[in-house]
Image (cartoon, rainbow, N blue to C red; front, side, top):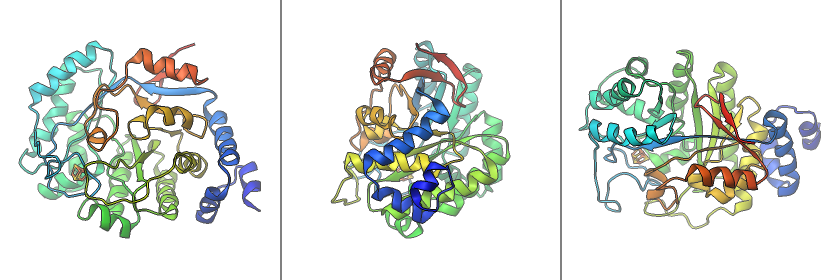
Length: 354
Ligand code: SF4
């Protein structure tokens, strides 16, 4: 069966098919991805009202692509107090957020309790707020630092109030690329193992892929296939998020940056390859809001959220430092021809804006 026949009949695609998809012209590829996206979600564009908090940027790791951690290029180390975090959330909750997204660097001086008590204090003050927190990389860091098993760290996360896990730290699973861009951080196998353990405890997570740096197309397809295999086992990923590499203030010397065509093709291909993950998120903080809106025609169905504030991508040049106002967000989605659907963190629909 040739590739187009496979696409027409929704056959599962393999590595060779994924590579061949990149050779299709953008219009043809987009038509197939858009058809799949509309069959799943019609003209809905999902988003949530959320706040990102990055409590510390002090990190024992040295990922080459990172502009967030405190180092020579970003000599502003900080660690927030829990009171500071709760104070920020007082305002954010008044503004209507339903989710707080907490991701930290790997700070060996902060202490295990500092990491965990953030969550219990948030839950104590805002019981209805969904806490999305702790990447697999953070879990691996805490397990290594405090000589705990992954199961033990996950058990503590649940005990302290984490509801779901973000997808960060996946970067690119190919071991050679990973060795070059983020040596020493959680391995691919560990990242997948941690998410599998989290899913087995009955919780959901996101999965990411950082692309547009030194990886090749085949590494992206391989990354998607490893996620698809785990999803077949657990069903615990609710969204896949291709993150576009940000070029500023880091130590990864990338000469060629991706074209918008290549970025849109990657969204479209992820929609077609990941037949078992419900949502493809165009995280506008890394793609720009304009390209994210176009991506809604190329397989993506989710734009993350209003964000409100964000430190990790904006440190590397993204325009997400201050988020987007809800009215602006709604207007942008509507004028792009889609129906904005406010969702909760697990994709239950809260409000459809017609
Ligand atoms: S990407 Fe995360 S783990 Fe890597 S250096 Fe930056 S903050 Fe640390």
